[in-house]
Length: 116
Image 1 (tube, rainbow, N blue to C red):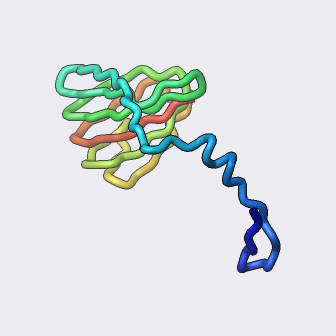
Image 2 (image 1 turned 90 degrees about the horizontal axis):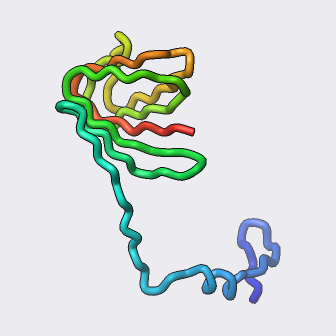
């Protein structure tokens, strides 16, 4: 089957057969296993773990000190506080490099952590 792309007036092939082969109908939601770890009043939830990366959600309530030996990305999704004396709030994004040996977090906030 062929269709015309309106912006360039070029014929583009539709891959309907291939799309059907990789589609699941009706949709079946996969159940993800989430490992939840409580550290005092804090909660660390593993969202995704693969051989290539991992994603966690951290709920910080007070002060938490974590040792660090690699880099990670941090997105603040709720609340506010401090990380190594840097004020943070909802909407902030940070790259914590491997040069930072210790990460001291304080306040009440939720963040998403992504690691290689």
